[in-house]
Amino acid sequence: MLEELKKQVVRVAKEADRLGMCKHKSGNFSIYDPATGYVVVTPSGVAREVLTPEHICVMDLDANVIKWNQINKPSSETLMHLSIYRERKDVRAVVHTHARYSTAFAVLNKSIPPIVYEFSYIGKCGTIPVAPYGRPGTADLAEKVAKTLKNTDCCLMESHGAIAVGDDIDDAFIKAQYIEEVAELYYIALAVRNGQEPPILAEEELAKWAYPKEIKF
Ligand SMILES: [Zn+2]
Image (cartoon, rainbow, N blue to C red; front, top):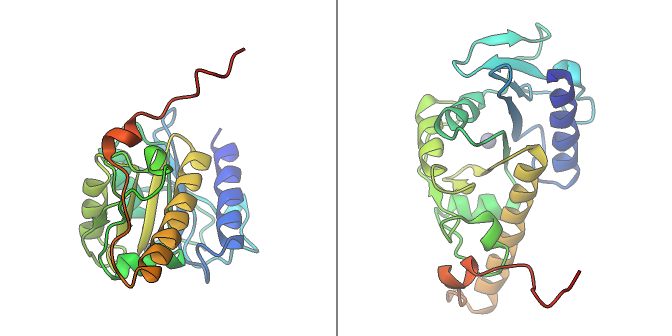
């Protein structure tokens, strides 16, 4: 099972890199396996072009390294992933990126309001919030991010990047892609209005989404 999860982490890390969401070895990816209680996580400093399942590290939730290749340590930002799994028992995967538009708003410490319908999927509390600044790799940042993600699946990280959680790695990854998509849209909307906030969708409206009953089977 862990071997299969390692392959999934590699696949998504490569795809995120290809999409330009985590250039220059940035970003990190993990999956939690409830059967073993272990987390598989991407290593520090390995280019995505050469990344293979053999590079993926196995850890427990207390940050003990269970298995690694004795060369490539787990990502220096792993504590953040572990804190999230401890805080959110429902989460099975974490995707952290330094995608461009998401990170620009993170730098500005500016949350992204629900401007389009995708927020019904990604922004459980309506808005994509910003976790307060913490130095990368620290327990302090790990705690702040886990706290911010208590009631939502997506957030920005002040002066750093973005992070998404999901039921599996594909779910977390698509949320991370949506964060970047809505960040870009928000940027364009602000730009054409000279910095004036665009209209936002009410939380009640977002909550009303349902598959059309007019479609008959
Ligand atoms: Zn980072």
